[in-house]
Image 1 (cartoon, rainbow over the protein chains, first blue to last red):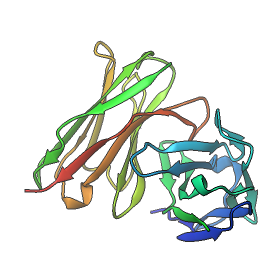
Image 2 (cartoon, rainbow over the protein chains, first blue to last red):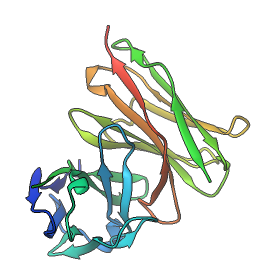
Image 3 (tube, rainbow over the protein chains, first blue to last red):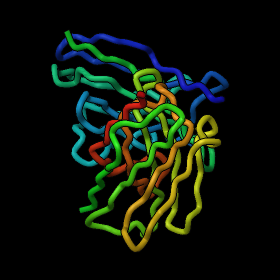
Image 4 (tube, chains in turn cyan, purple):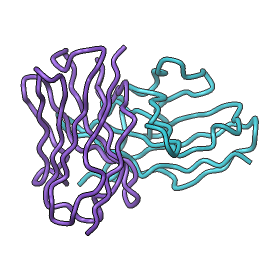
Length: 110
Length: 119
C-alpha cells in the first residue's frame, strides 16, 4: 500500500511564507503523479487549490503555488493570512484508477 | 454550473451496508468525466474511495475494494455508493466529486453527508 507523507503540522507568522511538502515512502514524486492540493476547513467540503502540480484552481489567489522540490510535491503559501489556518491535504495519482491522499498538514498562523 | 448533493442514512449499524446517493444537477452524469467518492474519517483524514465513468467502468481503492460498489443511474442522473460490512472506522463525512480533464483535478465537490456507524 502506497504511503503519501506530509508534515503533521506547521506554523507560520502572519505575512510569512511557508512551504508544505508531499512525498512518497517508495520514491520521488514527479509531475506524472499529478499532485493536487486541497484545503480542508471543518464544516466545508475540500477546496481544490492546486492540480497537476502547479495549476491554480479557479478563484484561488496567487499566494498559493505548487511545485516539485527535491522529489516532493510542494505547496507554498506567501503572505500568510489568518484565514489560511486550515489543514492541507495532497493527493497523488499512482496510475490508472489509483490515487492516494497524504495524511494532511495542520497549518497554524500565529 | 454543475452541483452535487449527497444523501443517505446518517446512521448505519455495524456489519451493515452504507448506501449513499449523489445527485448531479446542472450537468449530466453521462458527460466525459469520471465521478469519485471521497471520505473524511477521524482516523485517516481524506481517503479516496473509488470512481466511475458513465459507461459503468469503475476503479476502487485497494484498501476498500472488497467492500465497495459504485454505480451510476443515467436516467436519475445520480451516482451511488455502497459500502458493506461497515465498522466504526467507516464513520465519517462522504463526498462525491467530479474529475475534470486532468487526473486529480476535482471540481465541484458536494457538501458531504455524515455517516455514523453505531448500534
